[in-house]
Length: 335
Image 1: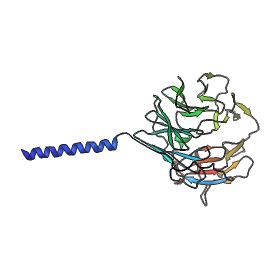
Image 2 (image 1 turned 45 degrees about the vertical axis):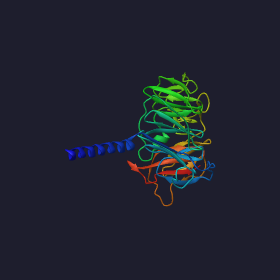
Image 3 (image 1 turned 90 degrees about the vertical axis):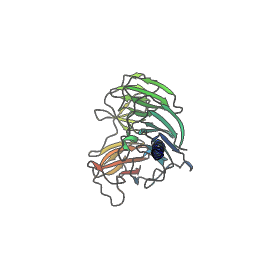
Image 4 (image 1 turned 30 degrees about the horizontal axis):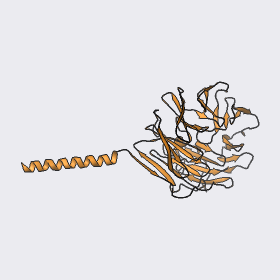
């Protein structure tokens, strides 16, 4: 009888121990590792390739590169580093997944699959604020490079001092400075974009970033060209007639002087200069001589995936058929 009791007690202890271990392993967890070094200086160099990374960097403030993994957002520097460096700061959460990342100035804002919106001071890596949006958010869709998570985050935009979150047919705006909700509207906006002039475009409709009011005097079918981050703060748009519109005022204005050279793909506009990709994978900035987008003896038989164009840098995801071009498939160049 004592042996049976002893075995039962041992079995009970093992079950409890396994339960405690499972709880410790599987319980929700979060680790924020702030920066320990001073904020880096802005990168500045002549036109040319600066490096390659295996993940897509969101270039922030011309000083940081922010990457998104399935459960982590992290930053490194400088922007013109040859490869990925040790993280300056990082935020890791579990079991939530990174849904999207945007930035406004030096504030990096990540959206998570559990509905949390978390703002990090990019200079220090410390949390600035967080809110529960109560809007459904998708999980991580960035695949290996995280490009779509940082360069085209679904349902996440920023502009005019607010961060916009969409889901469930609603659009909500939160103050970048504090996380306070500014307004909410019944507007589906999964594939929208914001302009430098203070508008958000959702499908065929345009709305004010200040208060969510509908705007009516806008051409339809506009596509963003050059945005500060992702699809946010876009300064130039392309219309269905292939005309280019300047979008940093209250109403987009058509421009006639910007003509894309034949056979070249328009990537964006940097400081008023066209940034184009040639058929043989050279990068041209305005009227300057094009330079090859390659490191060393790399071949240039790749196709562009997603990309980001800033005033001073361009980062392009390189694809080869249905796969990535190489391990370090994102190439970064100074403009």
